[in-house]
Length: 403
Image (cartoon, rainbow, N blue to C red):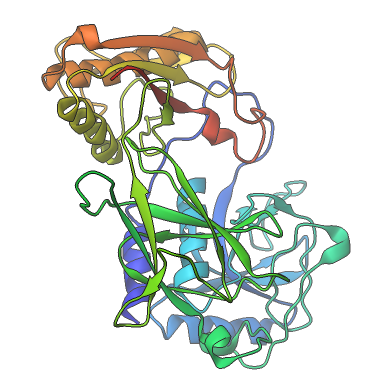
């Protein structure tokens, strides 16, 4: 059970910044990572005990709206933490139908407060959850509620699917070999696996290590494999799960299907999103987990001294609000110490965030003449500011001007 223990140790370290300067009246509540739902309490008790036996901190509470007992393994106010853990449980544990419930569970929850079930793969609202003393899969439509047969409350058997072969049941072993085109050195990153037929994300998997990928269950077995490592051009490959073949696709001595991804540095005109740069709420201060990616930008500029870049700052929504800024004496770009509170527009916040990244690069030896800043505020959202994916509007982009 080492994998499950690592999942929960890792979950405690996950955090992310959520959209600010947006307007919403939705009740947020807690976020529960749910691994099963039951109409009969004793089944919820048994299922919770089985999960706890695998070192998972499982608990259960009644969801009064659905009259189902939800068995959950984490409750947090951090939406991204819950989504990330649900995704990891789906891909790295037997609980491959885990979903997220946002709201409050328990018979004493406030009257009139409604909760929301969220599919972590699509981030769409689950309209209906059905249980007849059995765990359920989250569905995204009233007319197509998905349900699975409950045979035993042991984690290994809770979500069974009828598959054609023993290999399909166990899944296939893949190794996504991600490396630099010029030096052939391996690159850290993730591969997003997409069900091409249904246009839905199956999961994200680490590069350069053996992973187990289950049968996607679509008609043709076609998958899209996408990797976006900051500082390099995006690469997308198409693969058939049942017949993973190609000129450069091979099997290694451990029988992994090896799929290579050859990455090249960004070129003039390219724009890359810094997906792993996060800011404290309402602040022009980076969170500690941003350090790796901003240092990747620093490495790219040091490696390519002719590069000139433009740093684009974006927020979610255009409403003015509180802005927390670093003081002039502060040299800590990753903590809220030595900051002061102010007020300003969303454009001002996006300007200050872009400027903080520029200041960090200057402090680490990059010539200021190589960098420009552009503040957009909320003028260029990728989704609506109240969408489930609205946190993607809060971003920094790097445009290559010269190389």
